[in-house]
Image 1 (tube, rainbow, N blue to C red):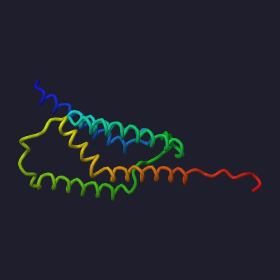
Image 2 (cartoon, rainbow, N blue to C red; image 1 turned 120 degrees about the vertical axis):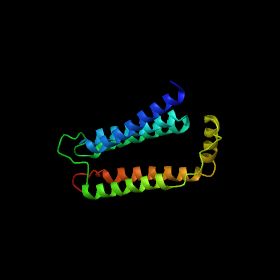
Image 3 (tube, rainbow, N blue to C red; image 1 turned 30 degrees about the horizontal axis):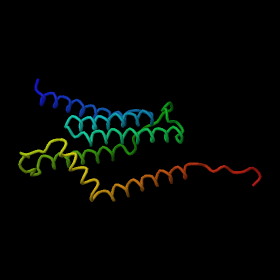
Image 4 (cartoon, one colour; image 1 turned 120 degrees about the horizontal axis):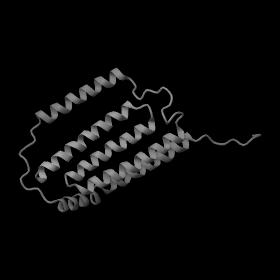
Length: 174
């Protein structure tokens, strides 16, 4: 078996795993299990990056999603009434509208992928090290302010959400 065939097999396996765990996110009755399924789905996407020799993006995806899903699971356990899903809970809302929007999105994505003029395939592809260096230059150059602003916004939103969710203690007699 050549390296290309093995690479395609692993890419297909991790792609199917990502979609499967993405479906599980909406099929479980537990918010924690849903968060873990989303973590596994995004980890499979990170592994797809690794298979495609985009090591920086793969490791970044896995590290970022592991942290994000851990924080999300902790917040769900702290603030939800039934994070374990022992009660009757439905993870989907507005099912008919969701199905229509999903179907329209699928048709639009297929139309774009099949009807767009993608141009000729790339003939000269730089190695993985060169691609990583170019990505680093781009991220640390013109995109740095955008990423820093997004990080600060997310942190502010997390702190604000926590402050809104916490019930202040009232001193007795006041």
